[in-house]
Image (tube, rainbow, N blue to C red; front, side, top):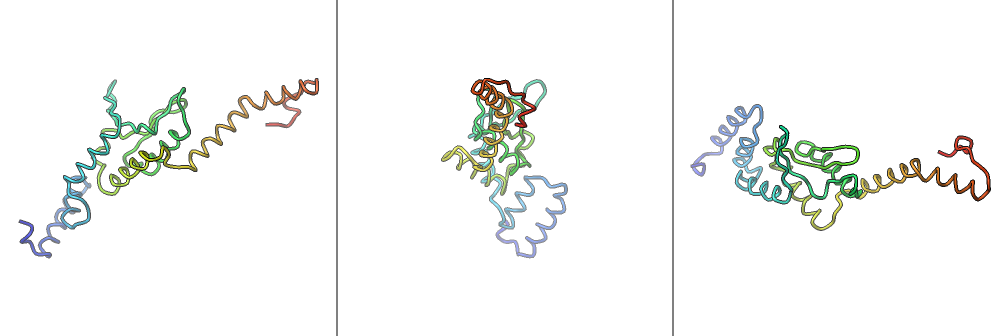
Length: 187
């Protein structure tokens, strides 16, 4: 039917749909984009979204919370906390804040896509997230600088939490004296 539509009629249809699309609805926006050739068709976007979600782990709702999809390469715990996972989580939450959320804090965390954000998975966001997943299939890190910064933070914390006191104790043993931590000026 749209094949017989003149460019002027198509423009009027798009204008009408854009008026109706307030507030924006992802499916209506996809339809408009498909009509003017800006994006994939809704079916193509749906297939691409299903492909992305199939690469993530689903966590069912509990205690009234909504379900969500976890990025395997962007979660950590007290006993498993590689800088790459923390860096990946921060990177995804920063660059895809409209769909990705950070859960947790302190000794554990993860980057997730809550079920309520699934309708926002389309267009450029979907294309870019699929690209990020392809990158993670080939290399486990999205942001080298972010991982380095996390490792540097951990070194600083280790110095304050343990290494400084051990260093001063070893100096005391070596020189057979007691060092007053405050008197050394080391922090």
